[in-house]
Amino acid sequence: MAFPKDVRVIDLMVSIPTDEHNAAGYAAVAAMQRDGKGQATAMPAGYMFKNVPSLGTDSSRYADAIVAEMDKHNVGQALISINDAIRQPEVKERFADRFFFQTAVDPSKGMDEVRRIRQAKKDHGIKALTYFPSASMPQVAIDDREMYPIYAAAIDLDLPIIVNVGVPGPRLPLRTQKVELVDEVCWFFPDLKFVMRHGGEPWEDLAVKLMLKYPNLYYCTSAFAPKYYPKAIIDYANNRGAKKVMYAGYFPAGLTLDRIFSELQNVPLKDEVWPLFLRENAARLFNLD
Image (cartoon, rainbow, N blue to C red; front, top):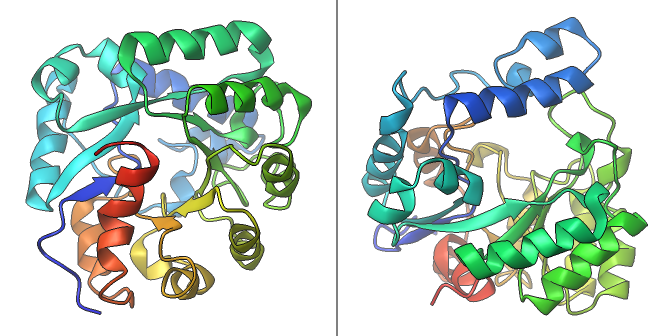
């Protein structure tokens, strides 16, 4: 169960923020929260995270700082928003081998959004879609009809979709991302590659049941420090779910890679599961090989 030092890790959640974009995104979520403290924190779920990483004050050097941290911990590639790269063209130019890209979806835009997704695949070679149901405005649940054109496009383009499930960190309603809502989506779209992220709590046992049920349903560990990984997920990864559970961090949004990788040493994964968890599952699912 020793943590391997020689696996070139794939991280399924990294961000390279710009000051303007980060502030605008956080402000939009803060505006949806009704309590004063929720609106005042530096990040939407600030009450949950201590010592949020700082990249300094010069956004032009963020990419270098992030790649340096990746190198320190043998992270070979990381999934980032294509918007981060578009706003900072040097990211694609200088670090083409270190990042692959996702785009967050807005189901309220209907077929215009489908066309945008197709163009993003054509222009930028995106490898995934992402969706945060509780932060959508207007709120659209995982199984709402507005999502169906998005899911169909994901299948056509062979793009996994990564969706927040479980109780959201920001003080927003959870009804749009209950884990049970994944069931009907996976039933209706058996070819859809659906990745649950951000924990799924308190329904992690249900998440495991659904992964046993549906071949194309997966889980990544984003936004959780390793010492808080749900036991049900670790047990599943060590058994029938060895090819279903993938590593994702939360750097620099809430956790440092120093903390993540120091705590990973104590996660009780089997020796043969570590390479799958850290790299091979993601490489296969996101067509990185």
